[in-house]
Image 1 (cartoon, helix red, strand yellow):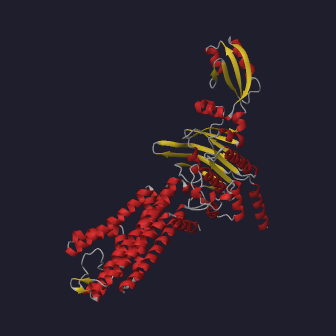
Image 2 (image 1 turned 180 degrees about the horizontal axis):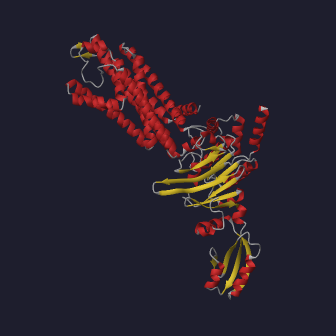
Image 3 (image 1 turned 90 degrees about the vertical axis):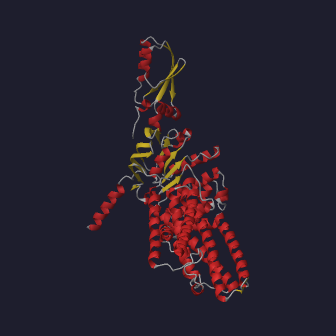
Length: 282
Length: 325
């Protein structure tokens, strides 16, 4: 009951604060630019003549992944900066005092905030993602092979990051929690790219960088799973791109074990946040 | 037979005196090396208005936050309205206005009240919520976003939040800090109205006059400890006399005792409330016997402010009072 009330409050906060307008503007800009880019791609002529259908599907996969990465970045930034103020900011400003003095359990309040942010983040990914797919289909006639699974993984990435931002926000200040969460997200992505290069070069040591970072923070792993769901496997195989090391192409789908690990990771970090929030003096 | 027994037991329970509004024992809190609250214990009865006084940093707000489960005590126990404070349900009947207040700026005043009613799990009709806003003078601003409110208006909203869920215990931490003189009078009337309805009020305020006017009992904290506590009569019932004396030597000063204040030749001496009427004549007789010339003896009553200052300046002044409650 408390959790649902707080979830509703968090959603209302998200919808009434400026963050939502920043998200809308950024997303509209990204969608507009990608529509323009894909429209140009449709009639692209290279030095070797017009693109074949296979080539254009490969390029569409690559560019779609690139644009979806931009979108996942917006979702990550948006949710991290919404999750940051929700605990640390309310404690700093004294807003939490009147709420926590009510007959509520702190884990219920935390669950409500988390649920509200999850609904907001997943809603954003679904709406913006579907809009992007429609643009790609209208411009170059490409439709990703597993759109629902891909968006679900992208939403999973958002959930991982907002859970981390909530944990940080229960121990450090508002600004710091947002910045650290986004910084870790970026660092994991870079480590993933480094790991991909290592795999392409057959260097196990370098490849391990990506593997370890994907276990420590599952954002990049889930993102690679999402890319795999968005790209055309036949086009990749045709041009021998399966082991390219490209940051915007994924070689393999996610394993069930990794998905389970991501779920366990979220549960663990949530539990730590609940523990830290329960002991926190406000 | 069984029904009869159950009835008797229920009667017995019903006949028990109501549990105190607040009971706490041995509260202790350290922040790093600094001890903010040290062994604070007190009881606050139902329907009582208890004033919390003390200098800045005395631990008043920390005590309040420990009572409400906002700060974890290092030691000690708390019961609110008959339930251990570990159980969140203990706070069902509690309304709280924090010292540092801010309410969700993206909500309207009416939405803030509706939120608190839901969190308190009490059914309060919309009309009653609106009446609560009217009580603090915000009826016309019910549908305005809180973000546009002045500090004084936010404090009024905080009072409405503290009162909206039909509380049995109201905790007001510096309720008048952002209010103008008119607002202060409103708060005083509000506390008196709560008292008339049998609601217990714990009032922390720097304004001693405010406390003196509305409180039944006062708890004085100093340096994290209870320096004194008692009813206003117990604290102030003590008379004082002003004596105009000349020729006061060391022996006469010793007879006057500690805790006196002196302005020129005027000496102010506290008289214990249970002196039986003999203390002043005995003192004058002894002073004359010691060769002191007594020019004038005037009765006077100590104000709460003077009493508070006396207690805080030298804790020995609290010796004749209940030192721990």
